[in-house]
Amino acid sequence: MIFTSIIVAAILAILASAFRVLREYERAVVFLLGRFQSVKGPGLIIIIPILQQMVRVDLRTIVMDVPTQDLITRDNVSVQVNAVLYFKVLGPDHAVLNVENYMEAVGQLAQTTLRSVLGQHELDELLAERERLNQNIQTILDQQTDQWGIKVASVEIKHVDIDESMIRAIAKQAEAERERRAKIIHADGEFEASSRLVEAAEQLSAEPGSMQLRYLQTLTEIAGEKSSTIVFPLPMNVMGSLSGLLGDQNADNSGADEARPAP
Image (cartoon, rainbow, N blue to C red; front, side):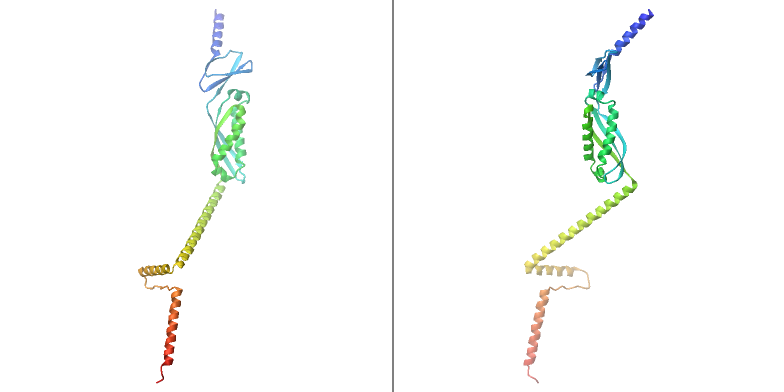
């Protein structure tokens, strides 16, 4: 009686183990006597004990933190970079059959790709062009993991750590760049102002009356200033006219003196 009960219990346990329930995001890679048979799920599936075995595969997006990597950029700067990787399994059979442990394989591949890609760029590109570098790393990883049935959705560089001495050097470089831009802007302003002055001088010289109006306006501005000393500007043509008048008057006076009879 006891022996019969043990046999019945063993049979019931074997039958119970034949029924498996897979969630919506899970798939079962089924092997029959060691050979790949099919991919089943989700829902209730039946696995023949001893003859069949199954491997569960999660199809949800996996978030993997890529450890900090030490690398040297193309301009010989030592930096530490870490990133985060988003991927998911699209082909459960390829993920089980083509690689021993796809999680470990993706992690190691991400580390080596991160070092090789970022090492080909300069420090300024690592700091300013992260979006393009993320896209390059994602494309390379996606091509290499395609044979494993894995789709790399995106790669994001999180931190770029630099030595304290290099941070000071970058600050000095940025300050020098700002000074250079300031000097260029100042020079451009001086050039534009001189060009405007030349145009104004040409326009004023074309109309003699406009020069007189400008002269009167200058006198008005000088008169409004609260100053005890006023510098009175005279144009050169006015000085020439005055010199001519004075010369003519002196000539007339000398002629009159010669014509006057002696007492």
